[in-house]
Length: 330
Image 1 (tube, rainbow, N blue to C red):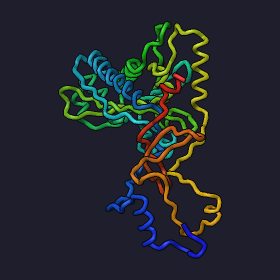
Image 2 (image 1 turned 135 degrees about the vertical axis):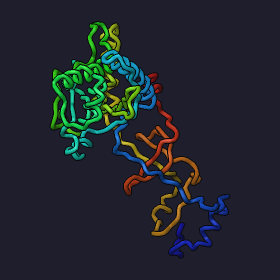
Image 3 (image 1 turned 180 degrees about the horizontal axis):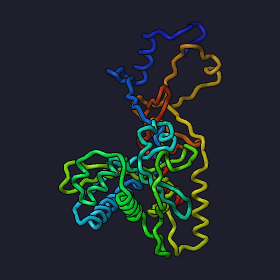
Image 4 (image 1 turned 180 degrees about the vertical axis):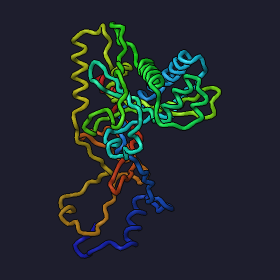
């Protein structure tokens, strides 16, 4: 640090200072890799919850293939093409011109109606209906609209997907999600604010003897999917006191808490602080390859490494120290 008779530390003096503290320059030691991270993509579900959802959706694919077979007496292959989380505003700002002829079937729950919908592109709808009817001639000739019979069959098929996607509500014997009576076309069928988080599942469907596959998509509010699949939902035989306690915990978990990131620290005398000047160098109490700390108040809750996102500082968590299970235990 600067004394009274010097304005700056020279490079040589800095090296001597570091050497006296047992620090040696290492090749690329000051280069810390910063990973780009998409902070705008919602992550409503934890890693463990996503595993549970994956198992659930794989079972949905198998059950839906069986329903398709029962409709047409033919074998269908249904696989999970992708599962992703989105904010509703992503769909609002994306071009809708290509989606205006899609077939949308909404479905609702006792908590929200509607809470999701099935999206079936026009050509996929035609392919599905003709394959179910076994109309190979219509399948090979391009067209834009479905007949009344085909649309009725398509409605039954989409409703069947909602049914197998919908667990039975405990104690009442009814499915958690109920489909609408008809399709919607021309515009997105949900009216949301834009910040709501949705879970999107794309199924790839192919008749056993068909050359090409087609896709059917289902989107649902994450909160409704979480509730219906029992990830957090309380069981029917729990006491009201336990439900109240759980509601309080869930409310507390959503309270915003200011957090800070601490790179390292050191101790200075008051005189040294008063003499600090531009270009002074302070040696901190942490090596450059040690993790930085994420603080809530004065408590370290996680450790991580530096990152950047769209020109701003960020931190990638590498070592959570305060887990949900510890929180509940305390």
